[in-house]
Image 1 (tube, rainbow over the protein chains, first blue to last red):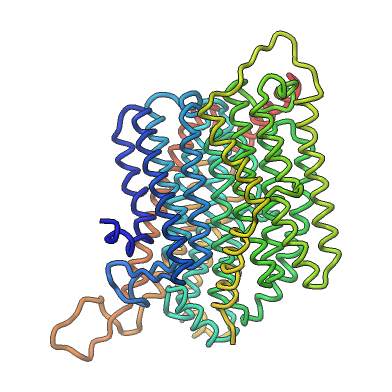
Image 2 (cartoon, rainbow over the protein chains, first blue to last red):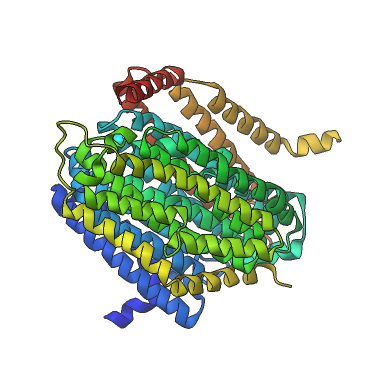
Length: 499
Length: 130
């Protein structure tokens, strides 16, 4: 039985949540649907662990769907990068599901609860599909599966605050423009090369050299993905969507959806277009790096002035994407592995932070900074989790945030750009300020009179603390993550266009 | 730029015009329904682009013609791809319209500036109440 499963891990990864989604919808009772989703997401997580082990042991796995050979059929190509991102998504999905029950019961009503689980599973399956596929057009299809379900999940926050609807529709419009740009890019690539298989594309583009059509395709793909991953000037949809979505959804989205877009960008830039594509070097140097730097600072400064802490963290997410983009723009093995590690680390810290805030919203109904007054005494575990995640966000030693910033700074020195290291440290200082705002309110302000609040229920605290402890565990022992990320970066940079 | 070039790329001119038109409507109109229609026009231009790619000069429908070796077929792959993209487009429109209905129920309007004004108002009261 087990041996029969092993060769099919890549497809099972996607198909299990995809089939589970309509089944979850048919289960009428919310708790039963939740239990079902729980089993499915943890099973997917188990599959992801097996898959990563398999990849680390055997190298790249190529899975041909329906046994159609490579350039004709769709191929799932799993290397260290995919397997790692798949692990991130499925682990966060499993933890968020564990966390979601109470929050969903409170924030979404009636029949919508079971529908939520169906949409959630669809989103998981879409994100996993984007990550695992080796076919450029397939990326688009899965990207839209995940995006469409995300729009719905954001809109489900409307019961608590009607602004969820307006943010969902503006996300839909921008997301669709992004996806359509991406498809135009894929179409142009197909016109230029006549193939959609990523490995095949990489081959033909490097033979084709620099043509105007490939450049146009590159531009469309970069802008399209830029919208999806909320690169600094294209990030407008993100803060509102994160602020008004139901809390478990925010925790899930913040940890996974932009990460998948970052992965896809890396895949296209390094594997498909390859390092020999000269136009790309200029883009990395003169477009990505300035945007990354501006993105590290301006959203952080905006975050400082937010009253709603959920929105503050959303802006901080935009800033964190700047770090990942910086890692990509330096394009060395060290910097790309820093970006990859940061994918994982940022998922851990943001999921923990948003879960802690979700617990506050669960008890008090909103996430405004004034609500947090004196909460350190009334909800000690929740606020302690927030502090843990906050320390990691700043990049204090012994947390995962430190590991990614350390690698990033190292790669800045390696590229002989010491001023970059300075800027990275400076922008971290802004993070100190906005995390401090919360700590100050929670621990140094008196409890408002007449407010009696209990600690959040255990089902919220346990997944939250698992993530917080993971923040410290992978911060102290970073050997596993850095090893996988280095292998991933070598795979990305080596496969593309090494002469 | 000769007339041959202009006429020879007729499809592409149509695609470019539709693309820009759609994008312009999305950006310039405040009515959510009009925005979604604009989005549709924008996506349709991409469908046309793919269908154009699939055309092979002198090619016929890609159904195997037994016993004829000399037949040129059009490329069926872009057609298949764009069928998928059309489905995605329909789904996006459906979700977009459904959310618009909900927006109308919650806000009483589907004009973007009025929605933004209400959102802004909510934000101000949120800041003041604290």
